[in-house]
Amino acid sequence: MYDLDEFRDGLTRLAEILHDCKTRFFLTGGVAAIAYGDPRTTQHIDLVVERIPLENSLSRFLERLEKSRFLFHGPTIRDALSRSRPFQLIDIASTFKLDLYPREIVAGEIDRAVEIEILPGMSIP
Image 1 (cartoon, rainbow, N blue to C red):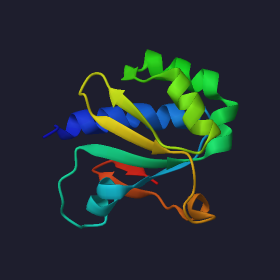
Image 2 (cartoon, one colour):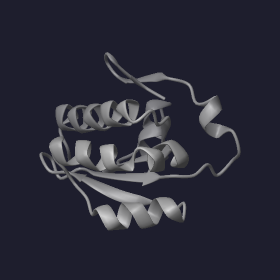
Image 3 (spheres, rainbow, N blue to C red):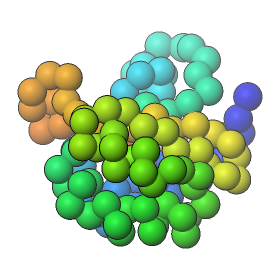
Image 4 (cartoon, rainbow, N blue to C red):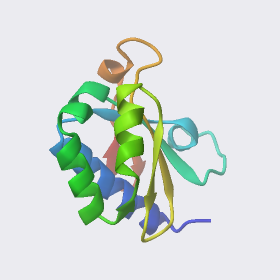
């Protein structure tokens, strides 16, 4: 099980990178369910991200990931974005896994995302 501070740190770093790359995102999966009060155990974070803004700032995104202690494979991310397929990042500090989905399952869902407090003092869409 991961410490909440490790979870907060990794998610904060990734959120800062996505904001810097002008890429909107929102939590989904187990962490989102937990945030809405459905108790469960999860060992990773799922995020839906805007594909086109991320593709447009891909070089910056990859550079920031490297500087922010994430493990990733650039060619895999490039291919995943070009095909709207999910890809993974690993937070080197905690080994926490983050799954990014560069597509909307339901049209307009990124526009409808609302920020909620998932941890004390930490709000994420």
